[in-house]
Length: 306
Image (cartoon, rainbow, N blue to C red; front, side):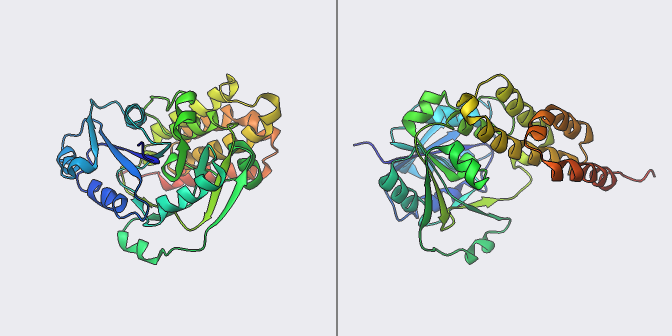
């Protein structure tokens, strides 16, 4: 009998972190799942760490093609009703999968999303405790985003396998926001549940996070803007307002991140490309605040001449 959940974990040179991620998986209260580890051409001991879990995990080895391609490879052998994409540096709480399945059994949605806690040291997660279950059910992902204005990466989402495959999976480019792109393509699929409590994931902050790579952030923002202009996202005119809000929120955050990091040209490129979207939504605070971010980023990243 097929499992309820397929956990797909892409990994690349995470020898020192993968075991903590897998230990959090096997500490789950809910047990009806399979674990697929996709090693994306690691050159350290990551593959040995994965294999040390024996028959409890399925390990795929492949050449280094990036996280999105590795995730897609894992889904090709996944047999679960739902897919959960767990990065190899993050931590599940013991109640996470059980809580996701409570939402799945109650509403049978296409997408279920939760909240996360950022951490740099794992001791920070000792403050996280299970809370009473509180969730909201929406018609679809775009409807939920318009009402609540939230953004999620796939690391804190559970997605119906059939819908994921129908969408074509992740865009196989080594840039940021391929998770947003995939979720936007599922934007009008039936059913979206937002779990407000308890917290569902510990997201590890470190230098290898993809959002620390500014050229990948720039490439991801351009991809989202171009995809919307080309009509790749569903919903037509009926969901234009929904897409503007959700995509605009994501792109504005990426533009500001580039500005604060001193990547002024890249930031201004995204600002220019998304100008039509922000004007249509009358984002006056963004227009006023953006120049200040640019100036602050330039000053912060200016180095005195020796």
